[in-house]
Length: 300
Image (cartoon, rainbow, N blue to C red; front, side):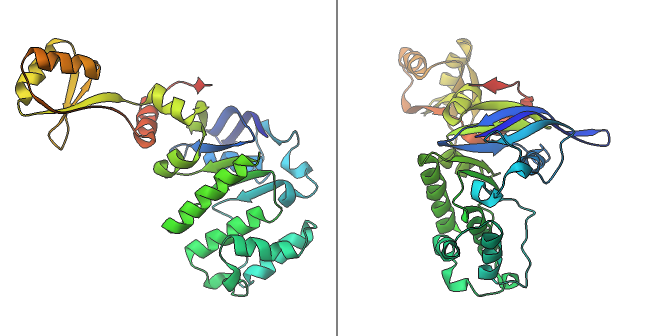
């Protein structure tokens, strides 16, 4: 597993990551979320020994990254800033990585096939599209068949088919008992793939909890109601202390009252209802609302 303890990084007087502590466990896909500038990439770089922390530790199965004998066989990593030499072919780049980590040469062909680059194996990397470059980065991360994956914005440049393939791959690897940490700004995708969330803001932990629990605890739950007599219903609900918001589609969003209570009040007033349903905000809505509030730490 990945164990981060009191991880801290400062640049001058600015603390980019401050006292960050969390654990990424095997057998689950963990989403690593935070707004731009929250410190996600810096944290990942410290995990992988590319940036030296001012305090704290980041260990993978009890060891710092630089202590790993063959790192590619133990940690598969994809960072946004990692760019292979453009004059190399895809197969040459991967063969070099395989040789330096004592990985069987045949594995190169396997991962190229796995990521859909078998036909482009001998093309120079400089001719690759953004999506092809991303697939090559994923091939490098998978090369050593590692028990741990650390991926920073892995869906960048992938088309819809590629995003679905990656989602299935990550969930499959977690099901095999591997540790998977994924950073992404695509909240819809995170809601589909991540079982657990680590959320940071301004370099500090905001939430460390299951995805469903995160939305349930911090999301906005409301009752949506549509009627031909909105003003009468509005008055009745407001009288009972409900908060109401008019949605762009003309429906009312009611908080503070359950759907059954809304239905009872409408029936008592003889107000016809065309729609009555309960909704919970999406992961994106919940995330943005929590960050805007500067929410306290949630752990489960």
